[in-house]
Length: 270
Length: 270
DNA sequence: CGCACCATTGATATGGATCAATAACTGTGG
DNA sequence: CCACAGTTATTGATCCATATCAATGGTGCG
Image (cartoon, rainbow over all chains, first blue to last red; front, side, top):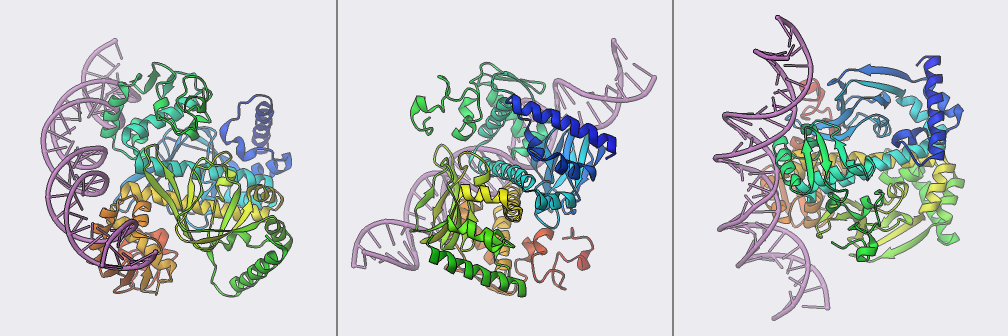
């Protein structure tokens, strides 16, 4: 990364950090840089560089040694695993402002997952060695990483849960619900952020099953058309909510919220 | 924890740490205390206390706020999740020397998993607040935690992979293989560390399927009798190995190892 | 000895995968 | 702007792996 690029990047970060302080708008993966001194930020960024990778490229193979932490400035990515006979599992689907290989760097040894662009991408790449050194030198940074990795872990647990004890309708419904909440719980229109077949794989089902499941969901006040999802009412997906997710929903506790403790006393009703 | 107990515990830790330096015997979860100053150790332990909990007790409910990090001094534990209709998924099965709620403490909010003893247990409990504070004050400790959590995350990824694209035989075979390697790759006798029905649940299958799968595996030079597993030869389970796991096997690279690069050139053969 | 609990075995049911054909969409070049 | 090729999504028919249901057999404990 050139001196100039570093400066621009830092400026942007600082601006956003100030923004985050005043408003409640916390952009997700800025957690990585949260609360860092200018100095620490400099150390991280001065050894980093940017890279553009076009859509559909394998950024990193499962089994490679991870040399960098990737921060997505632009574009979308999936991380995946392959079985010996070529079957693929999508572990994460991620976009702008998210990081990957953040956890892998601390696992030691080869990466258990591969990563692939699904759109043209621009990355900020921070060398793994720098990240490890800085984690050791700056406990604020280490704590930021801890927060990120535990969040990934939590998501992974939910994924295990979802694949093991939920049926396709519940999985898809829950996925849509989370998109809905991410988009702001009042927004009734959602554009699917990935190809259907990718989401299907991520949810542990085939594209055929995904398609059929979509038809089921259409009967529930939700319409899907050309990758556009339109909810008849804001509560259409509440059926798929759980107490944990409810906490992140702006309508949690409102009169119509089925999870709300006021409505059933204990968060385990329904 | 009383002054006395602290001292005994620290003495024991120090002894083990010295042991770990000289031999290659790295007991798993001592990672938590690895490389900490006496001072840091004191801080952590002086606010800790011990607790005994009998078999079958729910230590912590899914949805509770985690108040402590648990270190298992004695006994066995499972962490689990429940669906709204009562179905259970076992996330981890763990024993002596392992920790839990380590990651959850940094997730913020309620615990996404519950924990239950499966045997009589004795725990060292370190208050969550102490852990968080110490992570911030001692980057060595933070890095230890990072290592632990990323390891959990990796296991979770493998679990997702396993449930999604492996059949019951492969799952069970892989589980046995890992036990075998943990026990020292030359040990041909393994005692199942948990009840079959628990392992079954952990592997995402019913007890019935587990039982039938066991019969399949018996045809492959592995015998199981009353929770005792006996391998005809040390390579009986190699069929279920993958390049990643091979690295942790003492026989990796030997003539008969099917993963060894010498035998196929690239670690993707078979 | 008898009661629980757990594991095993057999019979049956079923959800989702697979296979196969068609349809809709995307982008490209004339 | 349309025609065409390539990709992605949908729909229908069939199959199969694993869950479920039900009965039996062990094992340990009071």
